[in-house]
Length: 236
Image (cartoon, rainbow, N blue to C red; front, side, top):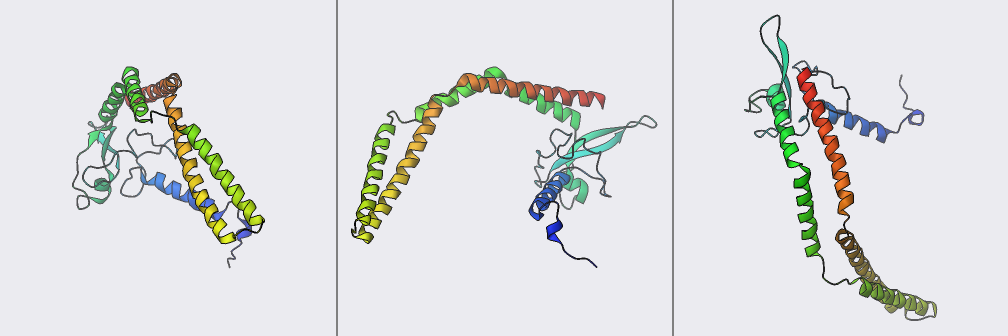
């Protein structure tokens, strides 16, 4: 006999469902044999050890591109070689997807890494950042309306306060309430405009030095990751 005892749960049902959903999403991106076994066990269950798994999509069916392992060479020196291919085709056959193209994983990974290295060259990034910042600055208003908006906001708040005082003094409640609601709408519009101008001013005073430092750090991390992928291919 089973008795439901939700008060004894260690974790909430909502948290349990979120964890199970994430595990399901993670599990779905790894290619499997026909009997359901994984093509190798990832070192971290939340990360794929394959560069494009979870990112690349099949151009025919839109399914995930995953790693397909095949044996190459002659016995007894046959070795496992990884290829990228459509997992929908591999799992469900040509009736689901006609794309039978497979590409050697080491070659594709190296091509992707090389393209990223060229694209993320510091000089190219610096030019792109400079162009983007200048273009954004050119789109900003020439005049700064913030002082005008702040004065208008103060006037709106003063009118709201006077209307509230009039209600407390026994004035026409319905008419004053309507005026207060109109002023509140006006105040909201002014507040949003002021926030937008503040954001634009932040962009105008953009600290490119800080951004370059962040980008250089990210580029260093990317280079380290790229080198890790290359070493893995050499070992395999």
